[in-house]
Image (cartoon, rainbow, N blue to C red; front, side):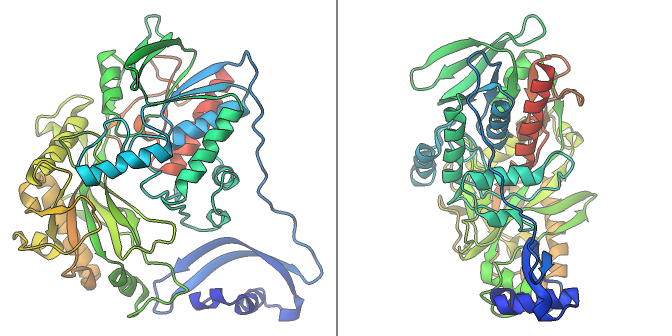
Amino acid sequence: MPAEVTIDPARVREAVAEALVWPLERLGEFRVLRKNLDARQRVVRAVWSVEAAEHGVALPARSVEKVVFPAVPVDAVEVHIVGAGPAGLFAALQCISNGMRPIIIERGQPVRQRRRDLVQIYREHKVDPDSNYCFGEGGAGTYSDGKLYTRSHKRGDIRAALELLVQHGADRDILVEAHPHIGTNKLPGIIEAMRETILDAGGIIHFGCRLVDFKSDSGAIESVVWLDLATQHEIQARCAHLILATGHSAKDVFQLLHQKGVQLSAKPFAMGVRIEHPQTLIDQIQYHTEERGHWLPPASYRLVCQASGRGVHSFCMCPGGIIAPCATQDGEVVTNGWSPSKRNNPYANSGMVVQLEPSDWEALGYSGPLGGLHFQHAVEKSCWEAAGQTQKAPAQRLVDFLNDTPSKDLPKTSYLPGVEVVNLHEILPPLISKALREGLQTFVERMPAFLNAEAVLVAPESRTSSPVRIPRDPENLSHPQVLNLFPCGEGGGYAGGILSAALDGIRVADAIFESS
C-alpha cells in the first residue's frame, strides 16, 4: 500500500480487506507481523505482513512471554565472562537460565559513568583506554546506534532475543520492523535493566577490571587474573569455563593469547571512511521527492560494487545520525556512526569501506595472525598525526577526493571533536584509496545527486570487524587447544553486530551447559 496510508488507521483497515479480497464488514481484528518499505518506485510503498481474522473471530494470543530468571543455586557452576557487550550479557542471562552463575569481568564502566568518559574525548581529546565508545557496559553498540538487523537466521532464535530486549525496556516495534533499531538514547536504560536481572539472580559483575592473565598449564584454563583499575590490585580466581566476549577492539586480549601460544588466525575485514550528507539530500534521492512526507522515516541506503578487484560497500548507515570518535587509546583516530531513536539529526552518515584480505597487509610487511591489527593501528595512527595529534579527524569533500585535489575548506559536520582538511589519498593506503575512489565514482553514477558539495569524507572507518579470529571447535564451540576457553561474538570473529553477537553468546552458554 502507499506509505502515506499507514498514518490513517481507517485506510490501513481498507487496505487489509482489499488484500484479502473481503468486504470491509467481514474483516475483524488484525495484527501486523512485519513492516518494510519499498522505495524503488516514485510512490513509496509500505509492505506489511498481516495476520487477520473474520469479524467475530478472535486472533490467537501472541504476546511477549516474560522469561523468568530464577536465583542460581549456591553451588552452581561458575562461568567467567570477559566483556559486558551483547555477547557477554546474553551469555550471562543464558547461563542463569541454565542454572549456572555468570561472573562478568568488564574493563569499562557502567553506562551512566561511561557517558562521562565519552564526553572527555571530544571536549578534552583524551581517550580512556578502558572506558570509551568500544569498551564499557553494553559494548560498542550502546553508544553507537543499537541496530538490530542481522542475516544470521541460522544462529539462533532471533525472535526470542528481540523479546528479551523488549522485556528489558525496548520498544515493541523492534518485533515487527524489518530493520529494527533501538537508538543510542534508549539503549543505556535497557542495558541497566539487563544488569539488574543478572545481579538479582545471583550473577556477579566486576566493572573497571581488565583481564591480564590466565593459567592453563594443564591444557585447560585453571584460573584467571584481572587487574582492578581503581586499586591497581591483581585478583586471581579459579576458573571452570571462560567466555571471551571482548569485542573487536580488545587488542591486548589478542596479544595475551598470542603470547600464551593460543592459536589465532588472521581474518579479512574492511576499512575506509565515513561519508556524511545532509539527511534531506538522502531523503530526496531515496524517496524521489523534494520533501519527505512526515509518514516516512529518514531515508537510508545500502550500496555495494566491485572496484579494483575488491568489494566496496556501505556499512552501518546512520540516517539522522552522528559520526562518533571511537579510538580506544591516545595516538589513534577511529570513527563510527550512530543515530538517536528518532533519527532526527540533520545529517546522514555511513561507512564506505573496502574489503581487505590478509595477503593485502602481508604484502606491506604486516605478517602473522596479528598482522591485521598492526596494519589497522598504522592507518589509525597516520590519521591521528595528519589531523594534528588530537581526536580531530582528517576529512575531505567528496568531490575533491574523486578529483584527488585538496579541499580548500570543509562543510559543517556532526563529528564533535572537529575535522582537519587533509588529502585522504596521502594518508590512506593506496590499495584502499584507489578502490574507494573507484567505488564512490560508481555510486555517483548510480545516484548522481550523491555527488553533493556538502558531502564530506571523514577518516578512518577502521573497526568494521575483528581482523583476528580465535578458532573454536564447531561442535562444542571451545578453542581446539584450550578445552574450557570459549571465543564468542565479534571479538572471536563469530558475529557482526548486536543481534548476531547476542545469539552467539546464547549458543556458547548452551554449549557450556551441555558439556558440564
